[in-house]
Image (cartoon, rainbow, N blue to C red; front, side, top):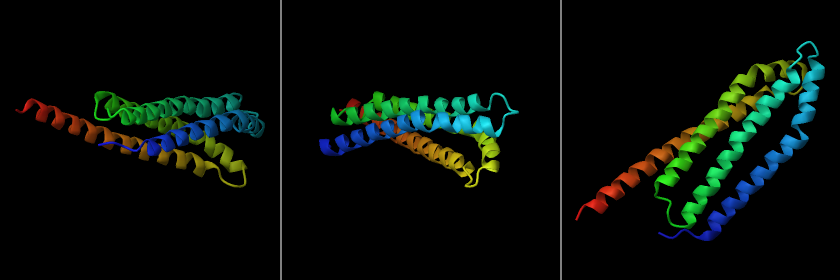
Amino acid sequence: MKVKRGSTTFLKVIIFLAGIAVLALCIFLVPPMAHFAAKMFPNIAPMKYLVFIVMYGAAVPFYFALYQAFNLLRYIDKNTAFSELSVKALRNIKYCAITISVLYVLGLPLFHFIAKKVDPPIGFLGIFIIFASLVIAVFAAILQRLLQEAINIKSENDLTI
């Protein structure tokens, strides 16, 4: 079954644009947000660093997951989507999404402190990121299991004469 290269190319462009968008947020939004949090809570000394740890800590698995998704699209282009490499990529995406959710769950009290003093509540942003990451993790886990079962069935059929 051939997949049109246009659809995978489109998805690769979307992955690249998502990476650029998160990089822009990391450069232009996170430092002012950390400084703002430090000014709001001067009695909590590591407040700025906690914001950096949560936000930049979540960026690392995000970029690794984007890399794995890019690899998955390459496997589809090469017609090797039904391989252990694809299963491994989906497993890595699942673990990255879980890591992002855990980091934001741990940072939720931090967002709660900041949300108390900010007019539009930003606590919902943290909850949205947790929910979206968990949905991605569950989706990747389901695809991983289905792909592994398809590979197992294919290998059984290849062994049958």
